[in-house]
Image (cartoon, rainbow, N blue to C red; front, side):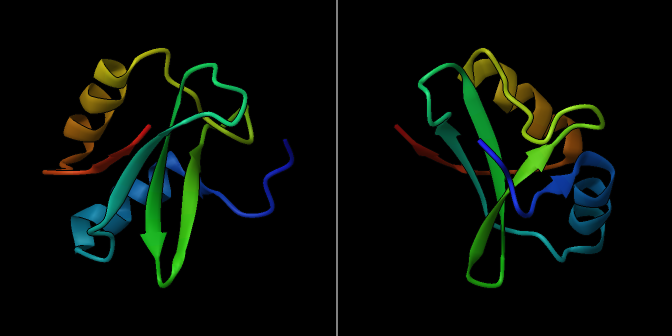
Length: 80
């Protein structure tokens, strides 16, 4: 899957620290293998990407929760 826009982890951390990002969503990856984490910017949900991959995936929802908590996210939606 080709991602046109995505947010780098470092940029996401900065947006959270500045209060610019407040809505988050964890959803199943399109192929059903793992989870993705998205941030809402305006009306668009942008996925988180890693430095090496265009789309970061987590193996479990618990792993997404640990990632989000480490960034200071207090709550996020889950889409099954």
